[in-house]
Image 1 (cartoon, protein in one colour):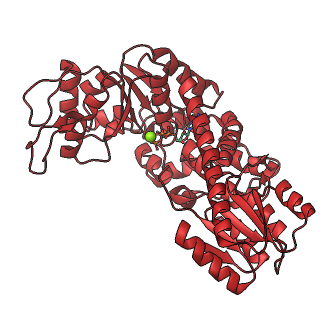
Image 2: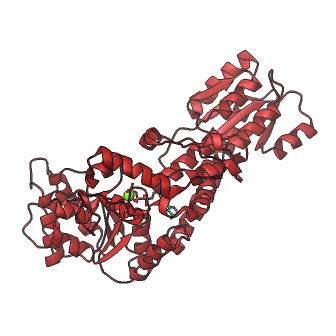
Image 3: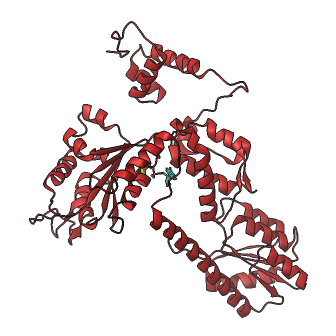
Length: 467
Ligand SMILES: Nc1ncnc2c1ncn2[C@@H]1O[C@H](COP(=O)(O)OP(=O)(O)OP(=O)(O)O)[C@@H](O)[C@H]1O
Ligand SMILES: [Mg+2]
């Protein structure tokens, strides 16, 4: 987590006092937000767009609503905020009540500024410790057993079991699957279960860089190798020595880089750009792509020989829509995980919320599910996530279409058949075009066509394929 500014909210109805205190605190701790009314403060704390505060300082007697409500609201919003209550009408009972609601400290008015600063400092120290403990615990968990992977569906389980079994070998692994299906997670699982687990896990995204930069990223370069190379650079292959190199989006490499990578894998050695000395490293490659590499090979966009080198062990991750039995467990897992991260614990999902999760097809797969739940945790006020809190966002939302499912259900095969037949007849029974119209792969469309026994006279006999 990058260091960030301390965020303080000050709630005080006395204008002079509020301005003076805010100014003094701002000088020492950075920007301070302030509110004069209790209800306004609560509204601000409820606003999902506003990041949780590190420190909330509130008066007890306030117009709008009581300071105790502000304490309650701040606590509900984030477990991490330190809450200080100030009051001129302090009584032991109120203090106890405030502490019970989760206040960190209690100050009797008039509060001297130096005293307030000391208390804020102490609250911040405490908050930092709490965060540190949470991070350490999470790290220890991850390290001991590899990443947490949820999913009991047979198709997904088979992929994870394979990943665990091949982890101990040195074989190259190719993880394939649609966007967001967990390719990177499985790659880190392979590393965590290997004998290299203590070594580095180095990532390189092959799609993010133009050809020349990618080569120097992978293999490094010597000083003066090209105009801007003002010093030597150690590439990812060298950084990953003794560990695992995760080559993400490997299907997006240019032909030249593909050729180079193939040579490195064959010769087991490489050169830094502009270097003459051959280098060797002990690296295990795990590659991933969401492309259909056999199709890319057929189109001449990917080298078949490189594919065979990478695909020594192929692990295919099924899309989420093909394993609906994993939806509930994944949703609960993310709810708990995100609740912890954001300091907003949530108990569970309302029944309609779960029904909605089951009804969506999740084109963005597990990543999309996680994003939707993260947003829901921010939007929901109560302990339970409701269906209104689940908002589909981004590209998938625009494409998303929510059918009005009748209570009695629908005959799925009939719908599929109707949609497919319509798409095919609109595209002159050319499967490739119909698939494009429906946003599915040609292979998948062809599979459904065969399953439903749809045929057309223009297709070759027995094969169910168009010419
Ligand atoms: N089975 C799972 N259990 C727990 N978390 C998961 C699981 N699958 C995916 N995730 C989480 O979902 C998110 C997306 O997963 P990941 O980044 O591994 O997908 P990806 O296939 O690499 O996606 P992309 O193709 O977009 O790069 C991550 O936050 C990951 O931790
Ligand atoms: Mg990825």
